[in-house]
Image (cartoon, rainbow, N blue to C red):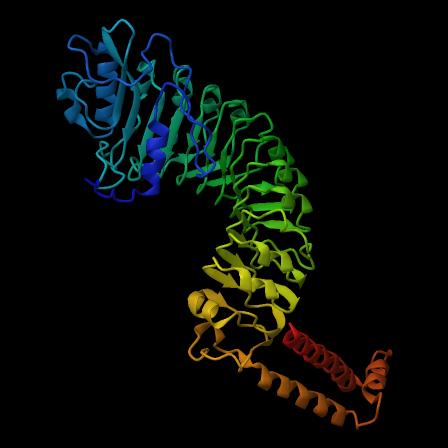
Length: 508
């Protein structure tokens, strides 16, 4: 009998399950997800680190740990925990216990709080009064702490005493709790830490340099805070898979030392104040899947070394003003895994590389709000998997190369406006009502207007061969009064270029 389909879980629940997983041996490295957490494999030898089919009839929770858990629960507004005779045997969600090898006691290894969704049953927190109790220090076997939206009504700093958690501690997740103040330097004492997630708080000041001591770190997420200062040097973090420092106020360059973190799958430094150039060393990250450096103040050129990232699926560099930077023609030949390419609002110039059309896996392509010239490459017709394609707001000319099936399929997700020289071929049937062609003229009309302008320009110059050129030349002389003639010469060159581009487009 077919099993019932499971409902899709929110991404936050997937993260929680990954963080709380405690198994005997690590799984193979995952290349399909950006958030990768490899579980602890070096737990205390005194504990049974294997799946438990049930609870012993004689084992019970260590009395000191029982009291500590009840104090932690009470501090979050869950005073009902005082009535639980045995927190490990109670089997309530949010606590995980492992027996010792003697079979006499259970020890608490994981605590989780916060209402993730209607499908989860972690103890909720009283947002107005909840605090994080120092009683967690009385849990010597604790590996994981998870608090989600627990202290939003009672903003408080991240407690420095967390840096005194035991040597078994591996994962600290404090997401969207409204924490304020700096990240405590004491967290650098958690030398065995694998996961540090402080996403979505109100943390400020610089990222403490003590975090550089966390050489076992595999996931660091400090996104959506108000952190300032420089991005730390992570050159010794050889196991780091996920680095997300986005949506802060970090300044300075992108550290070239990130190129030494060869396990990186995701780098997101977007929405900061970073400056300087993109380091070539990032091209050494052969396993990188996502690179997002958008919305900073980075300058060009785009390093050719990024073209070596054969595993890269998402390259997002938008809104870094790189005026007069061109994209090398063969840049994308080694990026065949790309599904998302976003280069919007960068001031890029030159022609659009034909090699983009060879990216058969591409779903999202945004090249809008640049200064690209020339025609839309004919190879774009082969982007059969594209669900969004934007080239609007450039200086492109010539006929739009897409077939009617592609234009109807993309609908509003195809944007070509803001390119005065672009046009569509009236010989193509079935284009009536295509939303993406709104404001785009047919090529016959554009060609006719161009011819009329050329005739007008010739008449303005008196119909004399070379008159326009002579007028333009004389206007360049110091003190010249022929500024109108100079404009005529400039317009003549523009319309002549447009006419030639349209003609070349029809030959494609």
